[in-house]
Image (cartoon, rainbow, N blue to C red; front, side, top):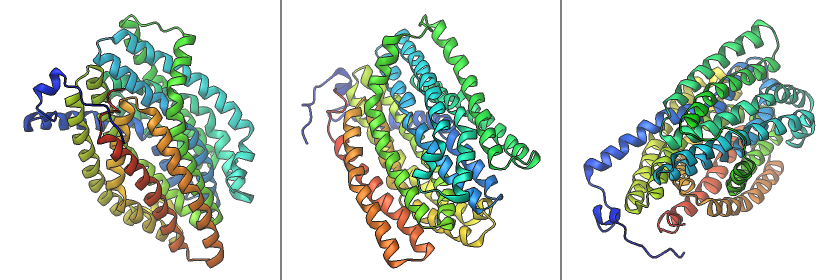
Length: 464
């Protein structure tokens, strides 16, 4: 792999021949990462937390309802995840412009992201409402599972514009390093979603539809809560709040490689859900609980990566490449050690909290097995996700799109092979759950770790 020849900067000279940072400064950077990571986690967990709450409540309606939720929520999280470039791309651009001393331009970029989020959210919501049934059927759902999936998806989908506004607004907050408000929004949104879940599902007997409606209301609450201060800060800085066609199209164009990168991830996740669907209702129901937990803890790790992303984007914008290199190493280590701590907590959670998701002992067993397998790979995932966030912060979108797509090309045939093996040998539900999560982590997480690690060894991603 080729890299640009290192070019010394005043910052490199101040930090030593390798951009080294002394122990006191390293400690300060770790504190900065933590200070940004905790509130950022609050924003990141919003959608997965809503689905986790829905899962815990819907699981007590019945197994087919929980399996239907798995299909419907996968569609929701997939389309929402595909649009996370609204947050990641905005974080990178705002951070780099701030580092270069161009605050007004940075905030105008953030406003462009808000307009793009609203346009995309409304268009996708209308399309997914109309095609909910074929979408859920395409994922392998049928019978009562299909009926529940369609009801949930149609109830929740028009909350998507609110959540995409949250994504775009948080790109502004991260770029400005003002992220505490995102934690407040997530806590209030989760509390509202939980209260409305109980009211709609049990109090008003709306079933799985009530769960979707509760999430819809919470998503719009969070969107409004975060957009208002975003617009105020932009106005105070002299930024234009009106929609700018050039800015909106520019944001969309910049986000295309990130969209492709995320599309590759989501294709792998959807393929895994489809495989779980063919393994039976109990496996799918257990997979949904583990997947909801995985999405939740993964966002803890992603929060570390995004913290590094915001800090390093500012350093790159100011052309302090030595500090950016050292901060990359610090962030990657933080992701790895964070993964170890979160893995231990996840195992304990899986063992003691399985009854929260289902009264069925067989499904509870599968939940415990699945969380243990996921936990084993979390330290590697934490390291990989930290580097992923840093490369996004540097604007290295094309590399991420290419490498994620390459890993997906390898993963999909393995899913087909696993489905063939499952049909031929008819293994137990326990073996199926282990294979689902082990193959995904070894191939997808492992493959992306390899590519991200190789990229971070050079300098080309910083000096684009």
